[in-house]
Amino acid sequence: MRLKHLINYCLIIFFSSFLLVQCKAKLFKKSVKDAAIIESDYELAYMDFPNHESGIALFTADWARKNRTELGTEYVIKSDSLVNLSEQIIRNGLNSALKINFNNMTAPSDVVELLMSGFSAINSKNAFPKELQKQIKGIKFNAVAFRQPINLELEIQDKYGNVIEKQNFSIGKTEMEEYSLFFNSSSFKNISFKIKHDNQKSDFEGSIPTSIIIDDVYYVNGDDAVFTPPADDTEFLKWIQKSAIRFFLWNYHDLENDKGLVQGSTVWYNTLSISGQGFGMAAHILAEKEGMISTQEAKRRILSMLKWMQDQDWYQGKDGWKGFPHHWFHVDGTEGYPGWGPVTVDWAMAAAGIRVVRQYYLEDSEINSICTELLSRPNWKDVFDEKGFIAMGIDYKSGEINPWRWGGSFTEETELTFLEARNSNQMDKSIFDVMVREKSSGFYPGWWSTGFEFNWMQLWTGPIEPYKTNSTIAYQNDATTCQSEFGRPIMGLTAAGIITGIDDNGFVKVQYFGNQGSSPSRSKSNKKIAPAPYGAALALPFVPNQAITGLREFVKLGYYHPIMGLPGTVRLIPIEGGGPEMMPHWGIADLELGPMLIAIDQYFDNSIGQLYQSDPEVKISLEELIESIKN
Image 1: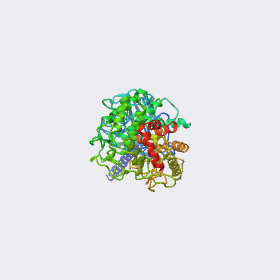
Image 2 (image 1 turned 45 degrees about the horizontal axis):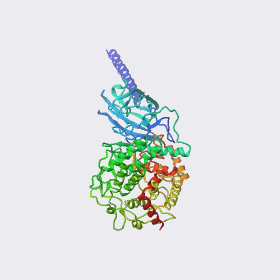
Image 3 (image 1 turned 60 degrees about the horizontal axis):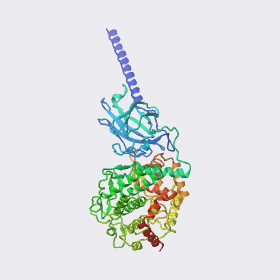
Image 4 (image 1 turned 180 degrees about the vertical axis):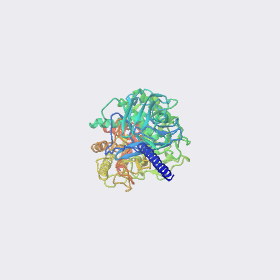
């Protein structure tokens, strides 16, 4: 019996051990399988220079502005279910990509979608630019899965969400690969990247954290060559100028009753500025000159912008105060934003554009009548204080002038504002006598010596003495300061939007700096962080060789686009806490591109300046202003 019990005991131990080994083996195999699912062999490649590919870049993640592409279009990442969803920008050197993370994708109906607009906002009613649309033959993108392979459904949609073309792609997890889809772009509006639970393979583990990395979304335009900016200086400047003009052509909006306006930014789709309308009208005149728009269409749009302004009430607070329009309006043409009332220098810029239009269409009685009526609206006497200085703005709510003044120190903003006050014929030439202009280091420095302080009036007049000599010195200082600060022959220290930081998910933070400028300045505390191409362009009429060299330096940095031209700024000072050694800000606006296109016009033939100076009121006032600074 004892032997039998011993044998049974040994058999129990044997089988128990065998079962334990089998269980461990199964558990080991399962853990290996999970490791294969969870682990990824992919790592974002290191780059020390921005990448460019054939076609037209839509999204490259170089800007890393959340919900915006480098082409200025909108994207959103969404899920209608209980899927846990997040997004981030990953980087290695100057290489960056969008990473979409998700888990809890367990229901058959679960979907994760990246919806990317082909132009402007996803739900924008603005027409897709024909110039762009006719170039688009398809789309290509790079993608890689993270933790497990993914089946991705790509849809090309019209503005109603109808599918024009679609294709499924199997995205692997070992290396970034390129995928493409060709389609008819005649009704194209949006691109949808969808990850559907019921479209995945049978071994897809929807409960575990999974990611897809998407990068370099390009329009295929039938050209295999990678775009590079023109080598010839004339062609190079024309390319930049046409990129700036294109902003105003593409972002023009028709409203009801033959009215229209120009959107103000590729970042804020719902805003426009009154000064931007002045630049917009000048842009359409130059667009006609460059053959980018027909004579009839340019005139129709300009007249529509004038009619939009004519239809407003600039006296009772809704659209403006004291005859001055608010600074900001909604893109549907309705009243502006609380806290942003009229700004006198912005009206002066809008008025300059209106005067250019009046001279350009001298024989058109309707346009002349509207222009003259608009120019007569502001009550300039109501914005002068007891010292003879001009209020910078008017409070949005109360209609009272604010405490800040033009006239206390030199800047061409002051010169242009006082000039327009005199142009109105409401004030006599004695208003110029109170303007404070103090020389230092052999010229009149600005308070911040920001670039536009030396070409804000001359944008419209063209280079004129003694302002021309002053601006020449100022822009030479810009070039010298940039060389000293950044070790590059770059230019463009001026007010602009600048990347100031990176959030926890890798997206950039942006702030407008009005105090970026060169040395010397009257404040002695200005910033030197991120040169702006429009600032370099402002220097073209004064130091052309240095300005062209400065503009080409942005190309050498690697930040350029065949359609968009050059970015708004490029940050060249490292961000505190770490980040790439340089970062482009592709958010561009009317107050950057308008000056750029006019400054380039000045370099060639100054057609806008000639029109402005031909205005009868400007002829008298400008001569008086010049006499005042000489004295």
